[in-house]
Amino acid sequence: MDRFDTLSQAAICAASRSSRWTFAYANDEHYDRERLFSDAHMHDEENPAGEDSYYVVSLRGAIGYAEDGETIDWLFLSPYDEVLPDAYSAPSRANFCPKCGTAVVPGAAYCGACGATL
Ligand SMILES: [Zn+2]
Image (tube, rainbow, N blue to C red):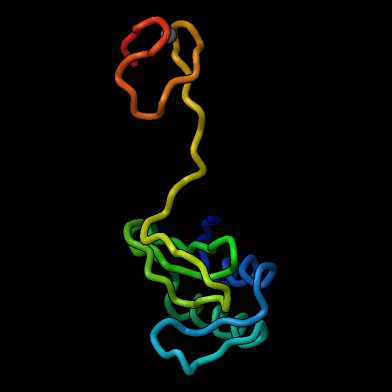
C-alpha cells in the first residue's frame, strides 16, 4: 500500500495499476483516468487533506482516504477483486536484538537468543 498527501498524487499512482474505477458510494459512478485526474485535481483545490490525513493506493489501484491517519475510507475501487484493509500498514521493518544482533519477532519483549530485554 502506498501513501500520498494529495488525491492527485494518489490518482497518478492508481492509474499505473488500473484504468477504471467505481466510486464506492455510488456504484453507477464510473471513472476512467481522465475523469479521475480531473476530479482529484478539483478535490485537492477545494478540500486539501488535513495534516494528519492522507490517501492510500492499494496494490490493484483502489484509492482510500485515511482521515486523521486512522481508518481507511475506500473511495475509488478498481475492478479487481481485492481485499481492502481498513487500516494503513507501513511496510514492516525487520527487528534485531540490540545486544546480539539476532532477528527478533516484532513486538517481542525479550530476545530469543540472548534473553536481552527489547
Ligand atoms: Zn539478543
